[in-house]
Length: 120
Image 1 (tube, rainbow, N blue to C red):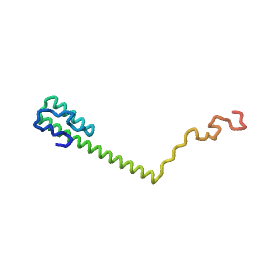
Image 2 (image 1 turned 135 degrees about the vertical axis):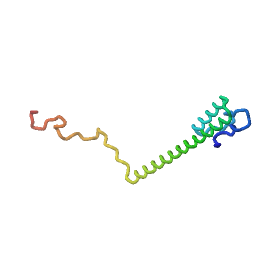
Image 3 (image 1 turned 45 degrees about the vertical axis):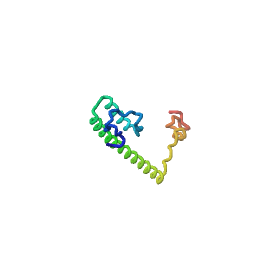
């Protein structure tokens, strides 16, 4: 059985474990597993069934924790590569704001008449 689930499941004590004598859960997945265990105990489910269920939940928590760690590692690698690319190429220059863009020099596009015409 995994270390994150209490040994009280297989203990010969008839008294269920309470939250007071348990160490706090490390993460959300462990809290979920402990909540499931509490519901099973409160429902009077057999100790063997609880033990098997908790074993399966522990394996699932282990897999999900492994996925989370791998994802964090990959995200760190992406950040490292991005920083390296910025160091090699340089950061892109910010775009010029629209208000600083010069007006179109062609008077016909701006709706103005060229000098010396009567508008015809």
